[in-house]
Length: 484
View 1 (cartoon, one colour):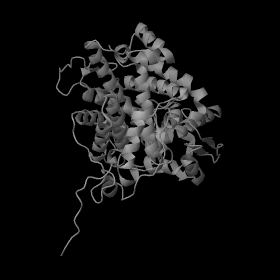
View 2 (spheres, helix red, strand yellow; view 1 turned 135 degrees about the horizontal axis):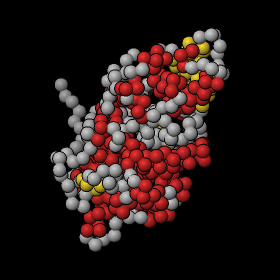
View 3 (tube, one colour; view 1 turned 180 degrees about the horizontal axis):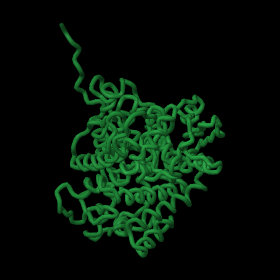
View 4 (cartoon, helix red, strand yellow; view 1 turned 135 degrees about the vertical axis):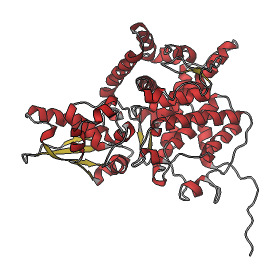
């Protein structure tokens, strides 16, 4: 028996890799809207991290790998006294900002949270700046961080538009790793060939399974997975800087490439070239720390809570709740049975609807065990049914709409049916920016107050709410504002 021999001739770089690298090297962001949105994204993301510091399940993971380690000129971790190497700092910052599922979101064929990339971007920018100052050179300014955020958002978001990793069982943090690697490598001053090497290493790396986001295995890894991904990106970029080789056909290689091994043999498809579209249209979680497919359902539940109160009824008078929703919502967070931990609860639409119907609010604390023991929550969960509306699914994928619609109908034990409450676009959607930004800034103020005294809060706000002042500020000086 004879077999065909495989050529050992080194192939050309996969076009997907070339497009990513040329974008981070050559594209000049000219959108004022993108920079303004990036600034709002920055403060919202850091605020989410500060809130997470109130939860021991998060803080136990933070700090150096070896207790007591301090890195001279290392990157600082906002809200703490840690000063770490850039890889571990990226893990710390990335874990903080993702812990409560309250930072920004991007929904398409794949979903994810592009601000997860800030962990690597801010850690590297701060580390580079402190070392520059120590050697008498100029530090990076915060506009470089905002530019990195815009580009990382764009890489992650544009790949996600047409390519579903969750359908093949992979977690979306693969895109955090790829986007962070490309942007961080450029920040580190790598050559084009070195950045290609780095990005190929991100694709060839082991990729996370989604099982920790879904029943029956839902757990806290989903809250640190992005921190792990952005830290790994920094590590791979630093390895590429030493001259570590890359793998040109990492995606397309027959049998052994990413497409054949992990993507059912299908190549990636792209809807648009890289620019600044994703940052301009990113979704902010402003009102509720809830998985984004449920944001509009929670808003509708809040409206229904008020409606019930107005007619002298409560959640205990409910016989049935029907949620008319989109396919992605059903696939990810339509969940029955016991919920074992906060990570389980914040990915269950029935739980996220039941709590505001009962209490008139939904906060991060409402996912904790001391709230979940209320038997009325599970009783109400059992009365909630999700039904797909095909039109909602179509509008969810429509690039000109990108709605995240949910509609709630409540039937009472008396037989009365309340008017259906429909919410197509959550308050964090680009279509509701004017309404949302003041609330986003209020959320940031609240999160600053959790951690800092009044004078320090004011110093952070004075810089963070002024576009020109923030952009011109040295990265290390800005991060120092957050040190306790």
